[in-house]
Image 1 (spheres, rainbow, N blue to C red):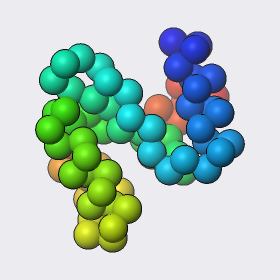
Image 2: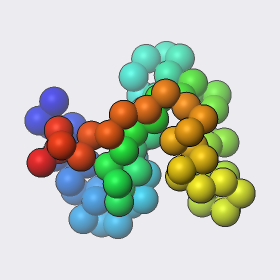
Image 3: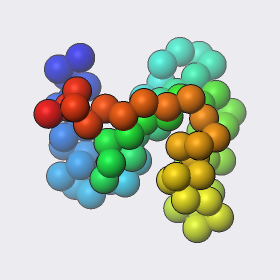
Image 4: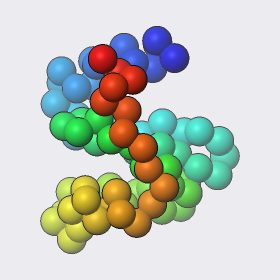
Length: 77
């Protein structure tokens, strides 16, 4: 998991607001840069969730409330 943490750190430094990790052929994890919180969504819902937040149609809190989630802040430190 250390390799993934390093990738997250690099994208955080670049200012990338969301990181998407493909967990399987049917689900992905979306990680929000500022909070380091993560949600798990279906592959079909991933693009819609990210575009809704970036276009201002939803907030990250809306996504957090809608999908299974966990906070990774403690794990990344």
